[in-house]
Length: 314
Ligand SMILES: Nc1ncnc2c1ncn2[C@@H]1O[C@H](COP(=O)(O)OP(=O)(O)O)[C@@H](O)[C@H]1O
Ligand SMILES: NC(=O)OP(=O)(O)O
Image (cartoon, rainbow, N blue to C red; front, side, top):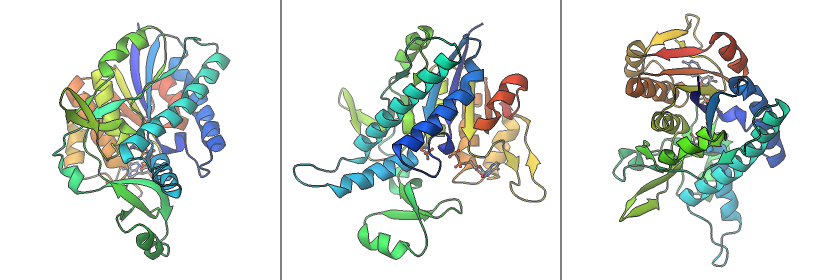
């Protein structure tokens, strides 16, 4: 039976500590190989989505380096689209190679420039929370603030300071309705990269807005809209724990969606890291009655073999 799965890739699937194109391509080659057990049987239709936080911030900085009347810096929505092209291109190449090496379908891997509808009145536009670009130390902060007086900066999960931008909730993945025939044709699809380019309705069309959408929330919406049987969120760390990092931490293996919703509402997960993933997974299961799993990229083989990972069940 054909199974449709949406896989959201965490930061380390693309960017390790070297932001060069070569290093990101190498990381994606490894990622694609690690995902092969998921589609080994050729009856899995897969959509891969990914983040763009580091890349979109770095590309914005590069824009400023050559900003002039003849070569103007591009706005954030456009830069987001550029990262979809960049990461989508690398990801297509990585999966094409990995699938050929694994003796799988030679149908083209496709990367779609994808827009995500958001609400112009989303309160997130008044409260920047999405970290992008490089990390800065506390010592670097005065210089960075002087250089970029319009930036908002925030501490990011104990790892340093980063620029933050608004991150509205996804309402709809505009192109999702067109994805079923692509998947049925045998193509692996890369979509909604970086959460999708945020757009609002504008007359009969759409207009880009300056924000970066959380890729886990958009992955959940994408999974819902393509009728996925399962959402798989792959993180840097791995499975989900209660009391994470404390002596009494508890590994969550199989949790009902009602129980997990309770933990989310009680604020049991860290805001900048695990909370959005669990909330996204919970919303997918609540809205579809299907299953979501949160685990690490390194655990994909075990996930395929024996279902290892934190499973959120309807
Ligand atoms: N309750 C928790 N259970 C497991 N990991 C957690 C928890 N709270 C915070 N984390 C941290 O969240 C990280 C995953 O989030 P993050 O690195 O932001 O994601 P991404 O992989 O999408 O880049 C894990 O590596 C871990 O360090
Ligand atoms: N857009 C997004 O959520 O990117 P990261 O996962 O890289 O932060």
